[in-house]
Length: 245
Length: 258
Image: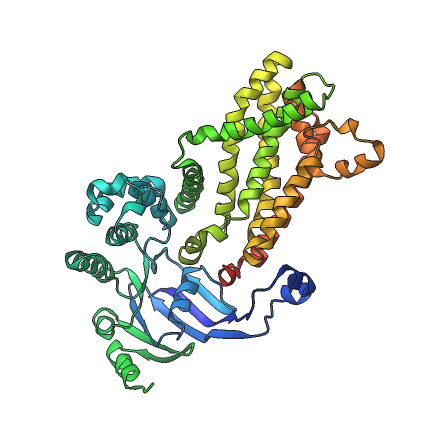
C-alpha cells in the first residue's frame, strides 16, 4: 500500500519573544535575525515520525498543547517544520477552522466559488457543484446575501458544505464538528463518515475518545510533542486514559 | 499532462477570483462603486493642474496631458505599493488555515489596481486625439510591454513590503513617506530636463524615471524609447528577483508573526 502521508523525524519550534521586536532591534540584530535564532523558544514537536496509508483513518489524541494542531498545520503546509521531512501526495481538504476563507461582505455564492477554488477545485468544477453545495447547506434564499447577515449556524453549515463537496482525498479534521442543529449535525456526521468509509484518507484529531474508537483504524498518542503510543485505537485510548495527569 | 493542465487552470482561476474579490470588496457599499477608480486619480489630477498650471503658471504646452500621461501609470504603482502593506496581515485566517500560494494575495492586489489604469485609458486616448498624435500601432505594441515591466517591478517591491510589514508594522509608515518622496523625485509633474544638471543624477538613478518616461513618450508623442524600456525592464527584473527572494526566505516563518 502506498503511503499518502510520510512524516520523518519532524521537529517544530516556536519562538517565545517576550516583546515584539522593533525595527531598531531588527537593524541592530540583523545578522542574528538572519540566522534565525531567537533567544527563547518552545518545541511543539520533537522528532515525530509516522506514515498514513491510502484510505486509512488515523486518530491523533493527546492533552491540550501536546502538538496535535501543530502537526495538522504542518501536514497542511501552512507552517514549515524546523527540522525533518513531510511528504504528502494527495490533495488536502482541511476541516480545521470552517469558513476560514469566507469574507463577510461577499455573498454565499461568491464565497462558495472562491473557497471551492482555494480548497482545490477549478472554477468550472465549483460551478458544477454549486447547486448541490447550496442544497446541502440548507441556506435557501439567503445564498445571495452577504454572509455577514448569516447566523453562526448558517455560516458553519455553508462552510462545511463547501469543504465536503470539494472531492477530498486527504481529510484533516480537528475535533468532530458540531455544525448547526441536531438534524444537521447528524447529516454532517453522516456525510463525513461516508467519505471516511468510502476510502478517503483521514487524519482525525479529537478529545472524544468514543469517536476515535468508533471511526479510526489506528491511533497516535502525542504527549509533549512526542509520540507516546501508537496502534489499535482501543488500546492507545486505554493507555492514554490510564495515564495520570 | 492532464493533471498539470488542471493545476494550471486552477491557479489561474484562483488568481482571477482573488483579484475580482479585491475589486468587488473595494467598492462594496459605496454609491459610486467602481467609478471611484476613475474619480480618485482625476480629482488628484485636477488639484495638481490647478496648483501648477494656474497658480504657479508653468509654461508648457499641453501641461494637463503631460501630467496625466505619467500620473495614471504612477497611480497604479503607488496604489499597489500602499495597499500591499496590508495584504498579508489583513488575511491572517486565510494564511493560517488554508494552504495556497500566498504570493497570489500580493499579485491580486496589484492586478486589482491595474483596473484603474485601464479605466483611465479612454481619457488618455481622448487627450491624445486632441493634443497629441493620436493613438497608433505603437500603442498596441508598447502598452502591454510597459504593463508587464511595471507589473514586475511593482510585484518585486510589493512582495518585500507585504512580508516585512508582517514582521515590523513600521513598514506601513515608512512606505507612506517613501511613496510621497518618490512621487516628487520622479519626473511626473515636471519634465526631467528642467531639473538642474547637478541634481539630475538622482533622478537618473531612479528606475521609475525610465518607466514613466516610456509611458509618457508613447502617450504624448506615439514614440517608443527602446533605451528607457530596456533600462526599465532590466531594473524590473532585479526588483522582481529580490522580492521573490525576500518572500521565500522570510515567508516560511510568516505564521509565527501574524
